Image (cartoon, rainbow, N blue to C red; front, side, top):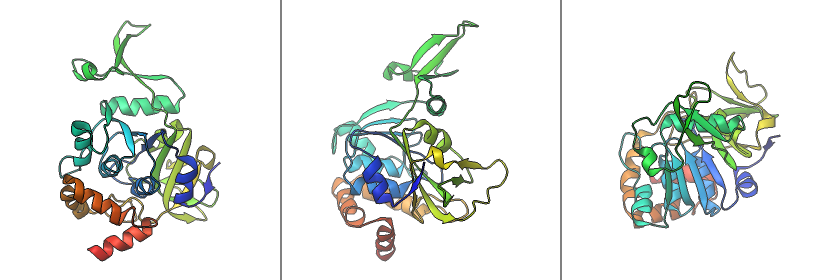
Length: 282
C-alpha cells in the first residue's frame, strides 16, 4: 500500500545498491527528479532498465551509479548521442557499463510478461536480425501448437520501478494522462514502485478508461512539482527543448559534466532547489 512520503525518504528506504531499477516514461512524464535523488544519495551498482534511455540515464551512468543497462534505444532526443553512455561503454568511464540491447517490441513484451508474473516473453521478432548474435538473452523457441519459430526474452521484473504522473489522491491512487509508454506494466512488474506526482488532490476526477494505478500496487507516492523536467507533463508544462540542446556540450566533456553534477545535483538539497538554481543560472 502506497505511503505518501518525500522523494528523499522513498529513495533512501526503497532503492538499494545493486538493485535493478526501471525509470520509465515515454516522451513525457520522465522521472528526472528521481534520477537526481539517486545521484544525491550515491546509489551504486544499479542495473538500469528503460525502453528509451535519454538524459536521465546519461546523468546516472556518468555519475557512476550504473553497472549495466538493459534498453532498446539510447540518445538525446532530437539532438544526438548520450555522451556519458558512450564514454562508459567505449572507454569504461567513470566505470565499465555492461549493455543488453533489445528491440522496442521485445522490451514492451518483457514488461508485460513481468507484470503477468511469467518468466519470459514470446514475440514474433528478431527474424533476420543480427541482434541475437550479440545478445545471448535473445532465444528462439518453436510454438508447441503450430511449430512456428518465435523469439523469447527474459521478463523484466525490476526491484524498483520509478515513474512520474500528474496526480495522486490522498489514499495513494495515481492517475496518468496523455501518452502512455510502459509505465503501467513497469509498475506492476516491480517488487517496489515509487511514483512522483505533480500534486495531491482530494479526487482524481479520472475520465472513463483512464490509467489509474491503485494504491495497493504502489510503494510510495512523492509530491515533486515539475519532477519530469526537461520532459513535459501533459496538462501541466511543456517540454524544455533548450535544455536538451544545452545538455549536449555539458555531457560531451567529462570535467564539464562532473562540475555540472557537483553544482546542480550534488550541490542542491532537492529538486525544488535544483529548479531554483537552474532558473538563476539561466
